[in-house]
Length: 261
Length: 351
Image (cartoon, rainbow over all chains, first blue to last red; front, side, top):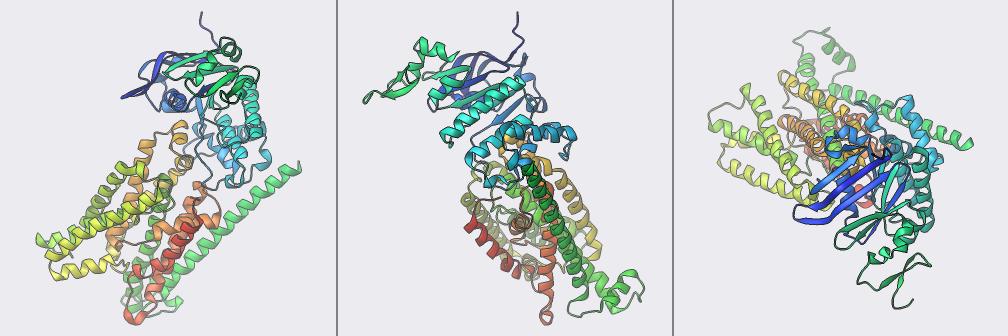
């Protein structure tokens, strides 16, 4: 019996480049309404997985299914209404208003000149309210703080109105308060719209406390999916940084120094 | 509630600003266009110009002949050249996400020049007169091939061109290569051809004849219309190629279309008026400063209008010292261009 709520699934997926396998045997089952955090060292394959899931890179082997259909069967346009993306790329280098930025998310839904219908406007306004930056709608994005700008980018993804949102390190450059706020926001969105949210982060303790699922990228290319509590209980979380001078402390739910515990 | 009201006021403020900018630019363009018909080696009263245009005056009168045969082509060519080069620069700046991109910086103009040089100086070697009706069409083809070659090169190097400095280096190097070939051609060509090529190379609108005007107008207008249709994908590209791809675009074909369009605009202009520097690089920045936005729905028409107005102003500057005849256009454009580039480099970042 197929679980109808599984929106993003992979079977024996290997990812990487023709000359180098980054990770293999990836078996994921992500559901609507759940937030999943990817944890792993730099270079463990978090970004590579996102690139593969949006079709930027071809899988080396294995299958990817979005909403029960193989990724390869998706046209560009259908892909744009199924998966939206938030990256860490700097986007402050030009002057458009927050409202215009979020409206860009409607592009897959609009005609050749990108004119917004009443429904498009509503969904832009809705996204601005959801992330709590409606009061900044008329500001140009170069005048926002880093946290506000990242919220605006998330609002853009929400306005794209896709069942799956992928975020590549959405928290880099953000302070703790913004990180907590934005992760809260992602949880609310996933619950309210039954959206599947997958993001990569370096903040282990926050991911363990707030995410529904964890994808653990261990060096050597193994990736496993489980609930945060399971990884802590079976000690697998400790394998995140082998050979480094850190150890996982369950009481703090974070990594601490081996030398000065 | 009050926040939302403030927001609405702010949006209205933007629309008022856009309206002011567009009205000012249109009025300015019209005034400059008319001035270019009135002033010159000999200035005619406005009434005489209107007569000459409406056909009310004697067709063989000096003023009618000058206005119709010389000044109209010059004014129309200036108008279109300004629009074409500026909007080509805008597309290049967004495509490469680089505030220093432009047809002359990237070497597109140099490529077009080389194409024209081969046609102008190669044709006489083959015994074809450079005054034959074939010459303007073959100049366009030479220019297109030259610009197209550079565009292909740029596509190949495009992943390195995100760095502003790399871009400048590519432009300088392409320019050197082109001028080395041109020097070679100059060395072997008859001196008449060399002189006409050198004159062409300094940029001039006075070479555009009425009967050739249509060959220039049609492709440029078509390309400008096509540019308007690219406003939506250009806005998507502001966020970078990954975002554009995630919004359903094939970034590769998008980039090819945009480079081809800017190459076409540059090539047609260069074939007729010579390699005109700075306009394509500078005008998009002026349009951004005036409108305060990077949104291409506003920026494309603003760039076209400011480009036309600025080009007309430059042309007007070239006809004013009338005793010396018409100055080359490239004498004037750096005077406007260089300060803006310095400003952009000092202020940095915003495209």
